[in-house]
Image (cartoon, rainbow, N blue to C red; front, side, top):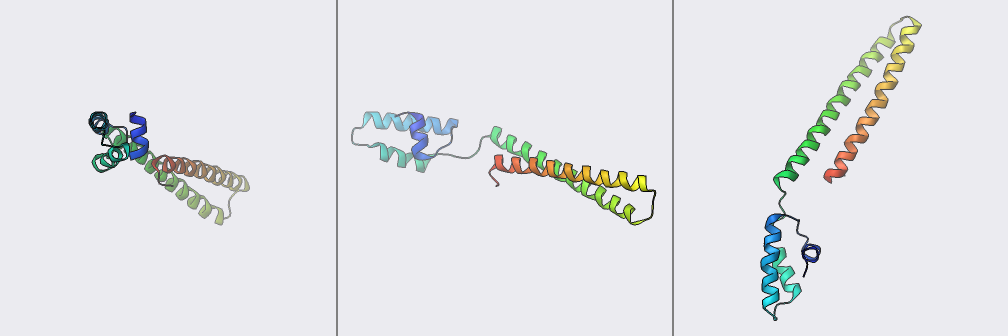
Amino acid sequence: MLFSEFQENTGCHDNEYNHTLYKRLEIIYMNDDSVTKAEIYDMGKKLMDNSKSEKQLAFEQELKDEMNGYKEQIKSLENDIKYYKTLLVDEWDKMLIKEWKSSIRWRREDIKRLKNKIYGIKWVLGMV
């Protein structure tokens, strides 16, 4: 029995605890002819530890922090858009109004780009 086969049938993550568990259950399987693979898999399912490693947790936190940073940038861009829209209400020089409309368009494009990045992070984290 291979570890990949054990993982496939138990759904365990590849971590040190589960690998040690696999080795111990494999010894039982190899030394006792009355034990079937299905019984080994059942034992593995009951005993496995699928908690995330510190490395995985740190990576996920890093992604969440990045996502929160993007959300803050979006809020800032939305506030800029609101500001420019209030300026457009007043009668100003036509050249300035054209520049402000252009700034609004750029900020909306930035917001779309940041939302796509957030979606990608959520997908990686399994939140989509």
